[in-house]
Amino acid sequence: FFFQGFNCGNIVVKFAEPISVRHLLKQHQARGPGVDKTGLVVALAHRVTWSINQNTVIVPTCLVSTVLLTHSCRGISFSDLVEHVQWLTQEVLTRGGLVSPMEEAAKAVSSTLKRIDKLVKYPSPNNTLEPLLRPRDSRRLDLAYYRNQCLHIFVEEALVLCCLVSMKSEAKSKGTHWVRMEALRRDAQVLAEIFKMEFTYRPRSGVDNFNAAVHRLIIRGAVTQLYDDGYGERIQLLSTPQARRLVSLLRGMLLPFLDAYWVAALSLLPLQAEAKSGVVLRGHVQRMQKIAQTMYLENKVHSCEAASSETLCNALSVFEFVGIITRTPTPDGEALLRVRQDALLASARSLPRAPTSDPSSKPPLFASLVDAIRKLDAKRRVAATQMYEDTIVS
Image (tube, rainbow, N blue to C red; front, top):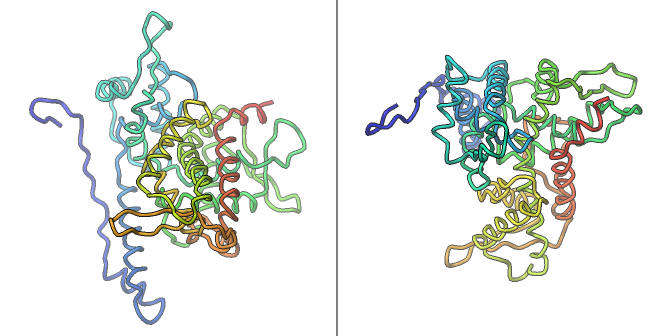
């Protein structure tokens, strides 16, 4: 693609299957008398968004950005970056994703690095044996824009695997990590509901999305299903190189969101003393960003992407829905935030059930603000550490 003499890369255009509004309307009418217009619009919007995601072609810029942001080391060589991009490409293809054709991976990665050179930091060649690349901290949000183009392919597996890693193992022997399948389902359900405003899950079509995600993890060599010992099905985390690499990728995708939601919850603690007056939403978002940046520099937050205003605002919307905070419009067009003192209101409600949930069980998201802080902190701490390698590798 050329614009005024500049090579801007390639453009890939793909059209999804048409969606019949008439057919969708008949489906809603078949459920009972009357038409819920709001429900119909929401269902149509979800269907369109999912269809767009499924037909999005993953380009090299997305692959390179994803590897750079999820790589756990402080830098990565060009040869390792090419190998990781090739591996990630295969992971996308095995899940039915669409990838832009690359005749030569090394050439595609090199061209991509030239286009995003302002987003990547190159240490001085005199200080290392070979050039090592890593994201510029000030431009991680720009790289995240490209990475987010492939999140929908892995999000369901990431939710399951993040919960599996963070749950306490029931195995008696050190070096083995397994949990009960139903406990994992419940935990993944809650995490999916928390992040429902961040991701578009697979539409309900009679397929259990939790079981489908577990099946994909088994196929890709991250987990294995153990026999039922009389107390329920079990699932075990494997310690193979493929499993460790997949865990690093998937937890790296969710960690920025876990950090951001935790920061948003922490920022609400001082507001308990200001319940009557409240604070202006716009000013509070800026304050949350400063908290995230400060805690990142103090190494208390693992990702500087936690300062994303969009993710922080989504977190506030979740806390508002479950009853932890309220939002009140003001005559000048602003909005005031207040922390509700009655924690029982928070425990009585939960977000609409996520596609990965069990219809027979719908646990509350948070019992209180403190409970939200503790739950999010527990998930993000384990997801960000090397405990996985330390505990299951014999």
